[in-house]
Length: 374
Image (cartoon, rainbow, N blue to C red):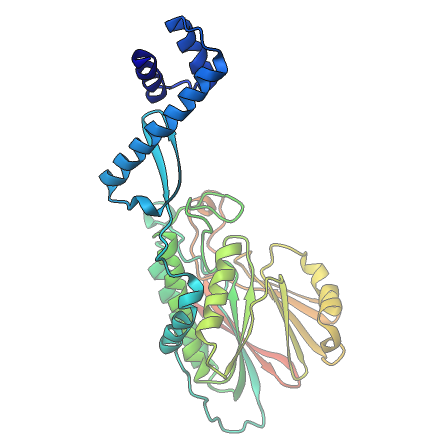
């Protein structure tokens, strides 16, 4: 019997083929020429396996410093043991939720309401940094021009400041800040767009996300000194997921600011009414330009009938296209980003790089286009 037990433990300990207790029982019955039936031998082996697992469990717990009374379940495979420890002293999220919220509130920026002079002849300023592509990499050695995350940030800051400076001749009582539109160059840790297209990149994805967050915060704080801001987010093809998360982060950041409103839904087309103007924005990788006027008429509701001057600002193509359709002007915007390797190879470059803005009169629609070129 002694040899029968030792052989069973040996087979259980070294069992690369994953033999069941019944198969081990058959093997032992044959090796020891036992008269016992298979079921009897199998039950003995099953009981011995439990005893062996208990010893292995205790040894493993001692080795890794895990209290054995906090082990929830385990199973033994060959020479390895897998342990699930359940700590009864662990505090659940619900226990600390209120503390977390209180701590977050302590660090939440608070923006005081700005008392502004009443403006009679007011204007809308549209600020639209299109296709910034933070994280894109272009090298002068190949493409003739450098572009990286820092260049992207510098151009947006310079461009927005340039637009503000050029708009000083107008009385601004409302600002639209158009966000999204490939603000980030990639959407995955594998350095690809949302659909999986590989990209030449500068920096890690999380670094670029934080860079874009800081850039948006800095730009919006600057715009808030001019007039109340409406934030319009456009989902885009390079950063469909992370761009949405970024917009939500910005909305959360300014949740205590009464001078900013947000439209951060995942809808691909957004609309905003300013007196006799209806402003639409979309990335430009979806609906065709000629379909945007009728889509605006269907989607903007009663704002369509209450306005006379209607515009849709699109992005994605990195160059200027403007066309008047019946009742709606559709205009694409330039990008401040340079051509990377793929665009250089295919000849998609040398178009003007710029940050653009627009001035809209309350009664007469778009009366000025402001371009800050690089």
